[in-house]
Image 1 (tube, helix red, strand yellow):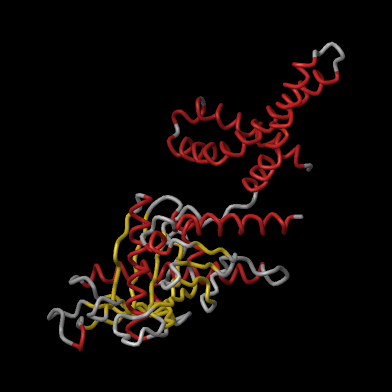
Image 2: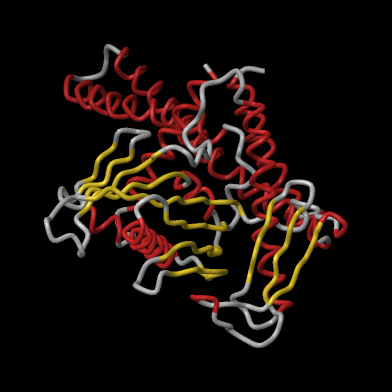
Length: 358
């Protein structure tokens, strides 16, 4: 089927769905929800197609006016100008339609589990991990997403060894999935008397939050151990065996959870993290299969690579995957300018996918 034929088919289907929503699905709640979802998914591409058709129709009318010998000089000049403006919008409209037609990542609309871990660099790495934690917390607040701590291990001096959070909202994973990887910081630590710049790192992992329907976990595949929660230095946090360690036997993935006083709550949070990690592993395996004969894509989730550098002396942030540098380090760490990096990564990813279709 030609592209034009596919576009006409989408417009026809859009009309069918609208008709069904107002008639046969009126008394069927499940059908109405399903049709409403399809209608919402079709709306952006149909509106873009209609805008393209309208622009092409207007260009045809202007071409007819320009070809008519009866058109006076003033009208001819005005039509020429209008045609140039309309023609200039066509490439962007064409690209938008093609992007909207790309297969959707099924996980894009999901919430996410975000994991922050200090890497090389000792206390300075843990302090940087805390900076990144706050950056994502502020970014979530700016987008109206819920940011809920699942577990955390701190250094006691303001640093974070490891933290796992749930960021809930529509399309969270689509916006954050390119944050996975090694983030590097270059700055002079407060404890450095000679003013020497240190390089440290922290690792970010962003996993789509999986529902039970996404990942089925058999109880016989789990080994669950309970133990007494402990704080810094091994001191007891409470006097009951409320901490939970969940081992997924087939994969060897282990999740420990002890932040809650209730064993039931710790198990529920642990299962949420385990489900997300299993779902991520399954997606990674499928991606690796598909990518065998293709170039690796931005956002493949390879967390062994350094993806971004935060240079404090120069006040800049550089994303190495797209060679983009922003001289607004403070605003990025405040979550305010992070969208500039995210938008550029999404655009680059879309450009790569479009190139693969050629």
